[in-house]
Length: 510
Image (cartoon, rainbow, N blue to C red):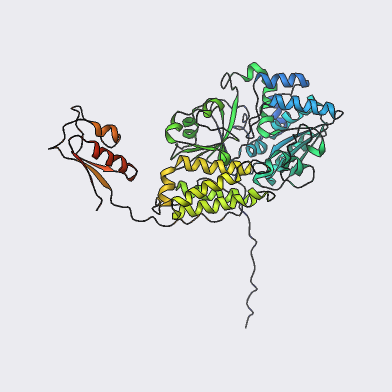
């Protein structure tokens, strides 16, 4: 008898990291040339952009001020002020200094740095070398978290040959907090890539302990474009107060270059999307804006401030109609809790507790569970070594404010009946999407009734329950029977009591 063949265990092949699709509104600057080649090597880069001018430190500061260049990694700090601080730090450190390019995108809703480093890496290196030459820094280091990105950057470094200052790229651990300033410099210096918790600026002590200019991938790419165009040329697109273009990651998969001030709806339409139930701006430390606000919002710092929102790292995440907002929020909160650096109690203990409490509330925990969520949020705020606890708390608070009825219905056990589709992307060893309980049968809806034999057209009811009672041209209610949402029941009872003709009554559900 033939012996059975031994069982072969097939290796588990992880899914490849997502590669974004690219688009632009108007003529691209950072993405220029990619309609002709998928990646610009050194020769194609020079053919497209030309040589890089040399600038002194003072000229570089003046250029950054003239175009109001700000960090594109999330905080939006003025780049000219960073340069000035590093210059002062290097003066005190006998001229020692470094430049660090933060290419870490720990958040799965962001892919713009990945797009730049995969497709136009020389533009990023140009900006970093321009700054290093102006400052007299001895080293330029790039920190990334994707192997394919590290390979692309290393190819670009090799294509340039020997340069001064030295260029190097380091593959760091993929974690949400890897991009925090002290975590980035710690990791590039050979230590653990964790936030230090100490309020020491990288301009004073950064890479290997020397003053360091640390900024985001897109910031250096924009600097390289601005150096070639000059301040006046750079200002020919965008807004007078916010010139130039910006990079956006839309729906976690599409990277769009657009001028500042572009309507949000145009960006969404370019990607075949609409505003859905609302749009999360700025990623998982960001803010939801309502569908109504999304119709008129434009993408600039000043315009978004009106909605208490910021562009952050450029993530734009519309929430489709077919997914459950409450379940999506729980899913992201759980992922954010798992992304803790594991070194601060309010983060390593507080964020999982917040996610668990939110999950309990969404599964029908009642109003007390929702109030406990708010208490958990207050417990982690301003108590971490970095901004991760505050950002996670802000995300949950924004979701609660954007979808109050959704969370209230889930807390009361009625739910919405929609699945959790994963419209807000997470990565890594994520738990399966939470299986929310089936919604309870809806209560039969009450109605507000008008007795025409008694009604005298006083119109007080329309003032007490606006949106329910609508008056016709003659001053009388347009309908005799109107559906009454549960949230309006108390107002309807007040209208019944105030009606001078006693012509109103609430018909009980049944």
